[in-house]
Every structure is written in structure tokens, then in C-alpha cells.
Length: 350
Image (cartoon, rainbow, N blue to C red):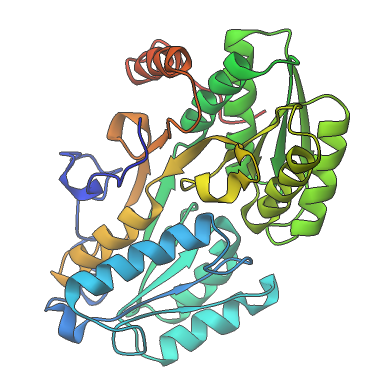
């Protein structure tokens, strides 16, 4: 479970209708699925959720995947290669998606469940344009939908937290309440309870993925109440969680506090004067999904109308070793195998 790039999601041998490997839309939707060629004449763009491509989390993971694809194809950032359009607030989603359409990008990604209503409308108005929605699903032949079993990775984070806490008190900070973030909360709480149901778990939501100041405030309250580990699933808001933990560790290094990162390895965000306070990070293969769908679409195999849902069994979510002890890593691995084997079913809702 070391931090690593995920395997190509298109080479996992998943041949059901719920996988990206089942490339290609219905025969009747030729316009939405028939694009082929090389990277030289294929362009992609992503419309971000609030938080931007430097949120050190979800948007950044997608952008890194897009950059990797562009480098592989010998393309440069810009209108003829790969690009992003940043959304600073929800009201910009429709405008940004239409901007992407008007700039003639071959493939348009919507990063995050919050773009689902806007993409549904824009995709319906532009049936010949290909779209990809991450963390939601849209029933349309010109949209490919990608979901991740975040609750499975969050369960392992809960196990890691329960095995590490010295106060028997941990916390979870979510961004905006939704079915997606519910999966993170539900999995984390279930993982903690699987190890020790007597551990106290605080749960708070910021109502935003872009409010680091509020994230810091919520973390301060949790740490003050006795929690020594906080798992955040809150995008840029989570940077405030790290900031609060770092401030406290710098002022009182004898009081060990931890943060569990989300969506990508957030070890770099946990550096403080005396070391690193990132206990572990949950991972999801957003960047790999971006690359894979771009490659498939470029080759004429756009998976329009398909819904993929990837989890531990597909090696598409997981956690890093981080600062976990060898004993904890072994215990987490045991729970991981039980989930993959179907011995444990992780809840998706709190």
C-alpha cells in the first residue's frame, strides 16, 4: 500500500458494463463515440470544482493526470493540447463548460459531483461533444461517468486511525455534504468501529471545498476537545486542517497530533519544524482515469453512456503507508483483503 501511481484502469480485464474497459457507446451514438487519431490532433480540457488545480487534493490529482497525458502525447498546455478552466464558484460551471465547448476541445472533463447538473444540461445541448464526469453519473451517450469506492479506502483510514490514536478520540471533517462525501464519512467511522467501537469520532462539515480558514477553525475545535487524529475529505478546506495541526505541533511538539490526507499523497502538507504529521492519505485514481479515457477516446473508443465504479479490488483506491507502524500496516492489509474477498461490506452512507 505504498504511495504509487495506479495501474491503468483500462488494463484490469474488467469487461462488464460498469467498466471503462467496455469501451464504446451504443451503435446508435456514432457521433459521440467516433473520434480517432493521434495526440497531435486531439485536445482535452477539465473544468474544475471550486478549489482549483492547486488544491493539493481532488482537482490537483485530475490535473496531474492531464499533464501526464499531455507529456506522453508531446502536447503543450493550451487550446490545442490540454488545459483547465478554473471555477471559483458553482455559478460558473455552466459558463465554463460552454467555454470549453466553444473552444472545440475534443474531450471535456467535469471534476467533481457538483458539476453534474451543469454538465447534464450542457451535454444535452451539445450531443456531438464528448464529456466525462468524475464522482457522479449522467445517463447520456455523450457522457462517460467515473465513480470510485471512496468508502473502502476511508475504511482503511479508519482502521489506521483507530490503531494509532492515543486518546481514543478522532475526527472527520468533510467539505460539502453529499452522497460522495457521505461515503468517506461512513467508511472512516466503520473502520474505526471495526477496531474499537468505544473510540469517539467527531464529525463536522464545512459546507465548502474551498474554505481553508473554516477548516482550520473546525480542526482547532476538534483537537481542543481531545481528538489527536483528523481525517479530512474537504479539498482546499483541508489545507486549514493541516495548518492548525502544524501550528499546534510547532508550539507543543510533545502533544502528538496527526492528519489523514485525501485523494492523493498529502505527506508534503504535513511538514512541521519537528517532522511530519501526515499519518497516511487515502488515494483514488482520478489522474489515471483522466489519462485512460483520453487515450481510449483518442483511439476512437470513447466510453459514452458507460458508468465505471472502481475500488480496492481494482487497485483504484487505497492508502499510503505514511507514518503508520509496521504492525498497523499489516493490520490494515488484513482488513483490505477481507473487503476485497467480500467478508466485509463497507457502508456507503453514515
